[in-house]
Image (cartoon, rainbow, N blue to C red):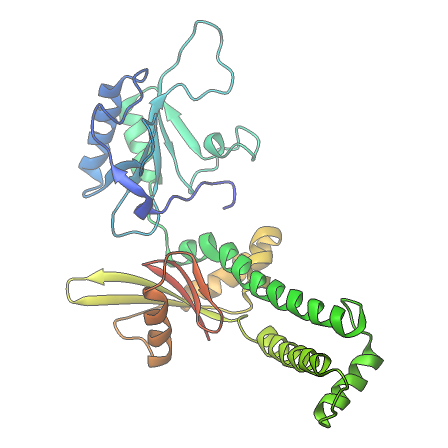
Length: 309
């Protein structure tokens, strides 16, 4: 779904008319479009990104969902417009639409349906403004998790290369020298230069930590939190070998479709989390959005967490 712009609901504010509408766009048809959708999708709201200036499209969302369901507009969306001709249409764009009428680099058009008839436009909107499933939320946020976990490995590698450069004047230590230095370290050898011994001890410790971390942080539980009238509801799904899953989603649709189908069949909804997972969510909950803590997990937002297994 990389061709579609996923908009978190916590980044939106509800619109007001006509202040939030670009002056060149007739706002009465757009308002009528919104009212028609609201009659059929009870509780749905329309908003613009917080602190944004006037917009010529509106995001459709429910405040208790993680992502906006899509966006609507009333404008001429054509790539090429004949001179002097304007064709205003009622438009809806969502992740469930792939009209294949343009190249896949144009996210706005690739995920848009248009109609000059408001009734048809409302029908299209009601059909395609669908809620994200737990699998949708996971696949939408997964690559950011990969990015954060990779940054941990990159930091570890950088430290090891710096120490190796001090010890042997090379960022990559040859196997024979590494074996000999490890032997000297474990045997308690006293180096003439005490700083060299300290650097070697740090090198050994950093290498050991990297080896341990390489086997950790690959498997996660994606915990999606929803506040209810009586407390919290947790939707949990296993995200094993997260890097391979992200790769398959992007490059191997057949393999990823089967795996995502299996994951969807094993989604669990509960009002209680195991103590280990709950403790990690609690630690992440007090951090900022998009915070990664090695050994704990990653917080996408207040509603979505990935915790180490």
